[in-house]
Length: 166
Ligand code: ADP
Image (cartoon, rainbow, N blue to C red):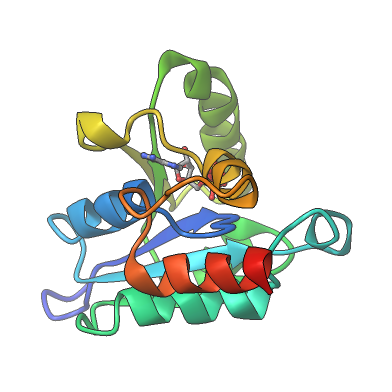
């Protein structure tokens, strides 16, 4: 790799919707990468269970990072390693909130490395304030009319209000 080749990192997940915890991880990634692609995973089986469509999730992420052109969102189906290779990414980023995340994350990192040895998974830890935060909790609280304004950025808050208040 030449010294001018930008370092690209892929941050995959469902992001249904993106929370401030995800945002924190994406910003931390910029300390080791020049570009972060937030990759919204979709498949026919999981899409039905999600609140936002893959396109809506991509759009929300792009709105949240509108002021930073080093971060962008794309959706992908199929194998993460194929998507990463296609985008010439060298890192896969995952956030670790608690030890309960660890076992599954370790298996996935090892499998991805088996599938494509050029890729390295980096685990980043969020600000402690976000360590309990998940998209599913945000969806649940918002669906019950709770205030989630501390946990998501304004475009996401507006989109949640629209989904639940109509
Ligand atoms: P969620 O568990 O919120 O539905 P995703 O599938 O969208 O999450 O998660 C994508 C990645 O972001 C995973 O590596 C997950 O561990 C990480 N992540 C999710 N929420 C947070 C958070 N609050 N802090 C740090 N990492 C997080």
